[in-house]
Image (cartoon, rainbow, N blue to C red):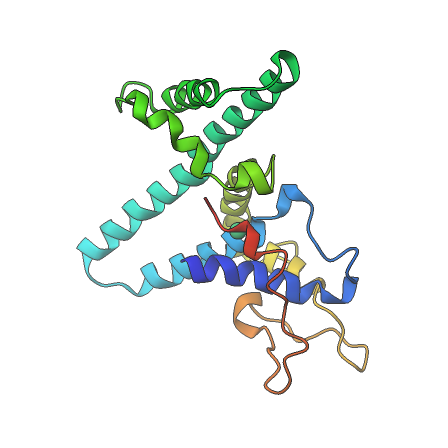
Length: 211
Ligand SMILES: [Zn+2]
C-alpha cells in the first residue's frame, strides 16, 4: 500500500509534467488525493480477488484502521500543531513540557476513554517530522482520504464526469498534439521503455510520506 501511495504521487507528477516546474505541483489541499486514490484502487483490486473470508476480514479491518489514521489521527495532530503555533505567538517560546501537554490534550480528545495515555506519551509529538519540515501539512491526509472515498464511488459510475474521465482529460498531449488514449489512469499510464528523462522526479513527493 505504501508503494501504491507513493506511485499515486508519481502518476500525478508524471501527468502534470507539461505544466512546467512552476505549476506542476499540487496545492496543499489536494496534495494527497492522487496518492490515496492509488491506495484505494489497489485495495479494491486486491480485495475483489481474495477468496479467503478471514483474509478479507483482516483487509477490511486494516482499511478501517488506515482511515482512522488518515482522518482522526491527522486531525488530532493538526489541532496540536495549531495549538502550539498559537501559544508560541501569544506566550512566547515554549518548553518541551508545554508542547507535551498540548500533545496529550489533543490525543486524549481523540481517544476519549478508550485508551489511557500516560505522561510518557507526551513526547510523541517529537517524532512527527512534518511539524518541522512541512508545517500545516497533516490535514491534507484527512482531506484527501475523505475526498478520495467520494471520488472513488463516483468513478465506479463510469459517467463522463467521473474522476477517471476527468483525469483522462488532464493527460498530456503526445508529440502529434493528440491526447493519450483513454482507459483507467493507473493501469494504462505509458511509462517510457527507453530513456528515463520523462520519469517523474522523486523530489516534491518523497517528503509527503504519511506520518
Ligand atoms: Zn503522500
